[in-house]
Length: 415
Image 1 (cartoon, rainbow, N blue to C red):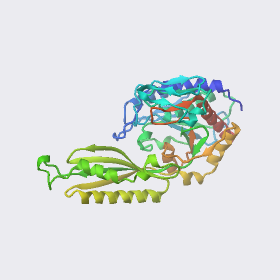
Image 2: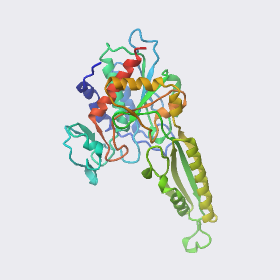
Image 3: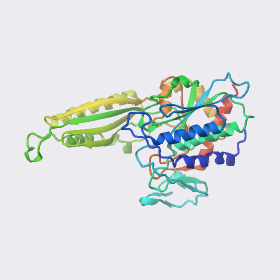
Image 4: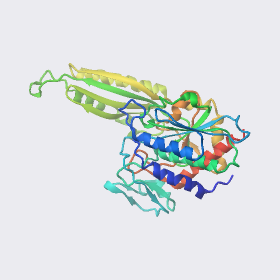
């Protein structure tokens, strides 16, 4: 099946440029879903856009999940439904407010200077160097871009729009989900699972062209609280237990060789995310990650040991540790249903895409769905340097991701 690249570009690039301008940064300090009001703005816009395409079965839930169902082609109604997911929110690591995307046509292969002293430099970014002559999209250096995961949204929306304008392409039922607060690690806490008919889904939340992912970290968050003993610092000798210093001492015990910046591939890590407090009370937020459950258990035990060591160093001080799961490795459950990955590989092959399996050093909403028995591999979106001011994406990779979704839906429609 031939799909015109220019037509796909016209469907996804304007959408993407519009979506990234919407401020949807989530807040991990807020328990409610959604955690920020800006996510409602994009969710409502997507709801109306889906309805504008002519899709009747579209809903926006009370917790900001957008759901839509494309009806099957006549005669294909009994085929199993397939779902596609992307998330609305962007990470809070870098500002996502007032994003100013820049579309670069026919990139000349030179350094691109951004604001605030940032730059996209082919000398240090081999992927960028390889994109000479291609079209790119990046932000201006004051914010992230938001390709994670608004590129996924644009690619799914583009595929839906294309299919609706090409009724000759036969397919079964297709379900679409746009979710809030993925970046906070909540894992679809308020999603109406009873709505979902799909027995297999795919997230579009990955990186460079050709990367397919069926395994991810086991992920836990640790909320470490330090209760000190305060007194006027002029009378502190033998009495003060400084909660700020307790938190700093705990953070310093985390092995630097097992940090995100010191690991890659299948190596897990500890990462302190935030520290705050005063003399009497302090809080240290940590995440731990590992592909194996035994690795998570080892790290959890180490945190308990660090807590005891800090208490021993600060007489009168107390340390409490609250460990919570965020998501689990989806590898084994996906491998019990190999057809879900095999048809994805077949779709890529039909498009002459060279694909490779790569572990996700993170997680997706698909991790949660997989844990509930719905295998959900992850598909590339094309984005690079996620969660940073130097985030960028090649237009050609976005086109390829959108075409892969279309071909995958077509293949599944063969029954």
